[in-house]
Image 1 (cartoon, rainbow, N blue to C red):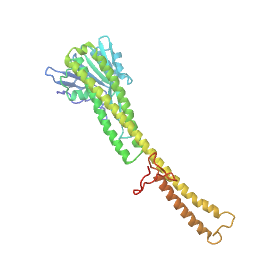
Image 2: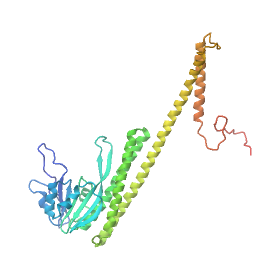
Image 3: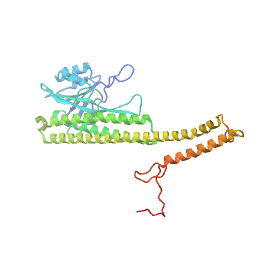
Length: 369
């Protein structure tokens, strides 16, 4: 792959780059090599937009849209739809321009929590007419760099229908790739939950579940688009294009299945840990109840010795007798309640004794028929 210009080259006065907004032009030469053009001081990238080229816009500005519109003869109104973050996946045409909108996956780290990643989708829009092919996204996407850097087989910027199918296939593959990464993050969160149940870990798991909802919605919308393209005659002119489109649909369905499985796993994990938290709370409440009942015994005994009546031992060492009796009774009641609550784990239908505990079967004693 030949890359005439390794970087955009436009720098700000403070030494920082201009930002992510840029125009990249791809063109396949006679030898099948993919040429990549970016802005340089010597030649603006707009001059590289020629028939049979592929123009990719990243966070396009109004000025860039106007220049690309003049170079490709695609209406500014049509190109401006790339600025709409809420654009839904669909297939449309206006005049000689075909418009295909698909949802592409994006990973964005949380600014407040560096260990938390948000997975969601943004629209990736494809515009093409007889001579020009334009793609646009409001954020840096993973599909176009993956397609151009790995040099997909038979990549040719002059074959617009095949290039569209190749982009759709790579887009479905990126869904699968990000779902695998999401699964790894989910396993890390679950490992953290097993060590310590904290709200932060539960919030991470909730965030992953929300991300799966976004990815699942985008995948289902993309599948509808591919099924619509499958019925268009231009996409069925060559058997290899039809086979590649079928592969893209299979990859998309696989991603949908993976998304569904991961959602079930995360939902099941959330339910399981909710039960664990509830059981832990029940254990704490049981312990507090036993302690409260045990501590109420000294209060009862102290109440007896504080009455205005003559009680045994009240005249001689009554205070110490009250302390001893309270301590012994509290200890006995505490031991009994602790053993009683621990032995309540029995099967339904088992015979119970007077205190509601399961009867123990003696090995030497035969059961009556």
